[in-house]
Length: 358
Image 1 (cartoon, rainbow, N blue to C red):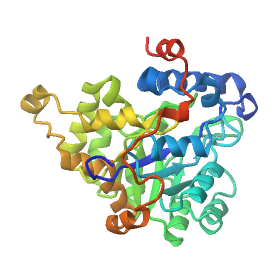
Image 2: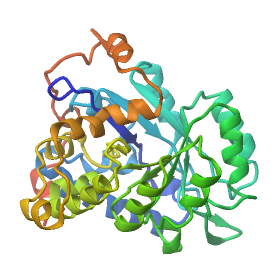
Image 3: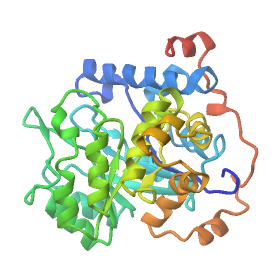
């Protein structure tokens, strides 16, 4: 918590860049190197995870404790990802989320991955809900179909709409879609926002959560936030900008707030993409630049708005009663104000950590 405000991690991942998990070892290694360099840049020497642990997958215990014991985070949403074109386990395997939930059932929710472009997508939705009891779905905008990187069209009534309808039949309310941030080769157009509006219009009772909102396509994202009340933005990776590019962060946040979306912005860091604490603290201490407020009329980022973004918006989106949640987690092992050392001591040597920040 921060000043008694709950903090929800909107996206947690377990990356696995081991060669045997990479469909194309060269592409997989390049993605891993890129993300680890970003990890070092955002985390800084004190919070940089040792390289070998990061590359092979930190695991449920390390990631969970980085969030719940080493940062101000109170609740985790673990995201399985369907990046099957590059990683055999999809990029962030479901099993680690299930392990986290087994350890800390009151503090962990799960987004289950499905690729509508692959056979058996509807059966996969059934399995995710009936067997694994997921809280939401997670989609990726590109998949490899018959050897070709293919864009997923969220507005396709034959490919995507049956998946959304099946989710609705199961009582799911949220569908998350990766946008704005490339992960390996594929059509850049798939990372844009143009296809989200058709899905939002066709399924007004579903919430479409745009992950990485603001990393690119800021104005297009803000326009959809203004037009569709069932579109929300998840700040995974965008939150890093508060650490190393605060003016870019201000411009993105200002656009979303101007669109009237203060109640539809979800906090996330993507841990173990970075250690969550530096990003949380940078956001909590962040102030909108005066010139953007005075010359462009961007709204202030008040403490109440920050508290909404850090936790209350996520809870509301998932229909979670905050008072009841606080009672359920009261007195457990993470109900303390004392934060433990980063990564359980698995911090990279200072010289290695500094190398990524240069």
